[in-house]
Structure formats: structure tokens, C-alpha cells
Image (cartoon, rainbow, N blue to C red; front, side, top):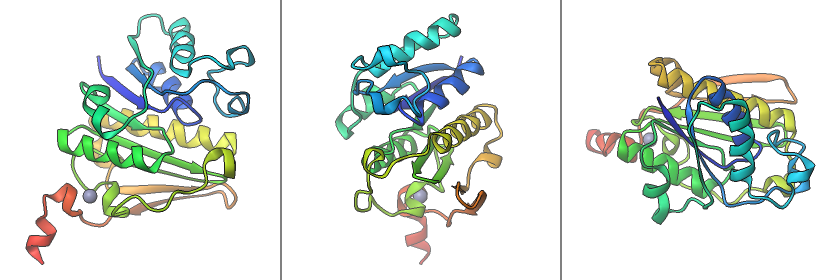
Length: 221
Ligand SMILES: [Zn+2]
């Protein structure tokens, strides 16, 4: 059975987890947060009575009620460089559901280094994006060379719950495409979703940064 590691069990991680569990994928949930009242509008695995409890434990219990045959591991931890191997090791696909630029690059780079597919997602107000790689380029760094200045957090800027749901389910769908072997259909581009304009675009990624092409582009120049 395939194992998906979902980093972040919030507005993106909840729909990702439900969709992957629906498809019979074993899960490892990674998050160090507790449920807050303001989360409930978009974090569909949690209820009012869960406020103050560990997200990974509540989510795992709720998923286990519905999918008793799945293996659902929990790690109450925040992803950083030092912990990447112990938290992500063994994954068949890693899902970035953190909405944290730092964690997003750690996931991108760890997955490239280990040849493991990664599905990266982001959502901010009415905008969303999904980018997948199959353990090789093109990757997130082909689009953004490095972590930019911190954007507003969800708490500051706000996130439309429906946008988080759209992006999270799309991330799960991309992961299932890759696990099912339809890698070419799922990688090589970034999908942007504009909830106000009602527009979805698939934009091809440039040809490979130094990180994912092993410096091939630099050598060719
Ligand atoms: Zn790259």
C-alpha cells in the first residue's frame, strides 16, 4: 500500500487526507498545532469540541472511524531541515499542506534528493496554486529560486474555505495521478486558481533549475 506523508493538517491537509484515504492510501500526518476555533471554517476534520486538542490526533481518529483498514501514523512535530529525514522518510509521495514557504522548500528539496514525488500547494484569500514533481525536475525552485519574503499568514490575510478545499482536493488528485503512473499528466507545470475570476490556468515550468537538473543548465550555458 502506498504511503503519503501529509505535512500540515489544516485547511489544505484536511481535504488532502480525506481524498487520499478515500482512495485507500496509507497516511502519515505531520503537524505540531492544536485545533483553534478559527480553523473550523476550512479544516473539515475538526469540530468545536476538538478545540485545544492536537490536530494530528483528532484527524487520525476521525479518519480511522471512516477508514478502519488504513494505517494512519501521526507525528506531532514541525518540519525543519534537521527533522526532514525522520518525518518524511518512507514516503511514496509527500504533500506540502503547510502554507509555510520554509517548509515548502524543505519538502521540495528533500523529495528531489530522494527521488520521491512531491505535491506542493498554497492558498491565500481567493488565490491558489498546485505544483507537483515526480522526484525530479522541473520543481518548485524552477519557479521560485528561493524562499521569498513572508506573505501574510492565513490568520492575517484570510482564506476562503472553499478555495482551501479546491486546492487540497486538487493536490490529492495530483498525488493519485503520480501514484497511478500518470506522472507526465501531473507534472511540469504549475496550476493557478483565481477564485474571484473563476479562472484555472496551467502554466508550464521553465526547464530545470540547478537544484533539480544537477547543474545541467549551468553547464550548457
Ligand atoms: Zn528545479
